[in-house]
Amino acid sequence: MSKVAIYAGTFDPITRGHQDLIARSLTFCDRLVVAVASNSSKAPLFSAEERVALVREVVGADPRVEVRLLKGQLLVDFAREVGATLLIRGLRAVSDFEYEFQMALMNRHLAPIETVFMVPSLDTTYISSSIVREVARYGGKVDDLLHPAVAAALRKKMAARPQPD
Image 1 (tube, rainbow, N blue to C red):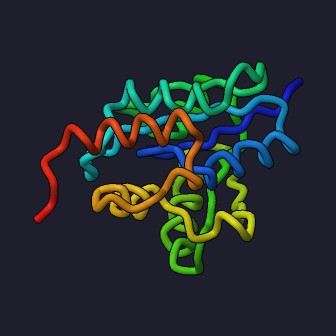
Image 2: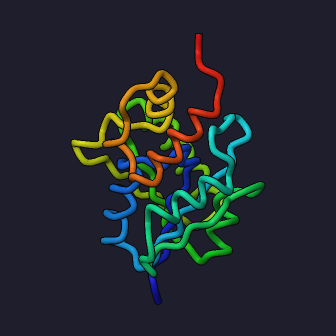
């Protein structure tokens, strides 16, 4: 029986930090489902379909990784659908822990599922999608924080947006 894990996030856009967690997650699961979430409390830069396509581009043809859209359902229900018993969550800072801890307890209350908290590698600790978007919005260099396909998509997206004051 294979161990299936889920790494869920908005991935707006997927960064080198996300990539790092995906690669390291594969050391303790047989199959990883990257669930691209639609979060009603966020206004994403990229559409859900664009984010799924970018994540697929980044993970490549690794047969152990499946990229799916998570929309309109609880993560634990999605986990049941895909046969996952493990959730992967990244913690960049102590400030992330309280919210993630509460979510892990609620998920365990709702279903028999475990959460593994992973810390980023030292060279990706400071990277977040929101900071990458903000820096890119003002023309800052973020290419080294992103897969080349994601960097190109971000440049194109920013070129089409009105410039900030």
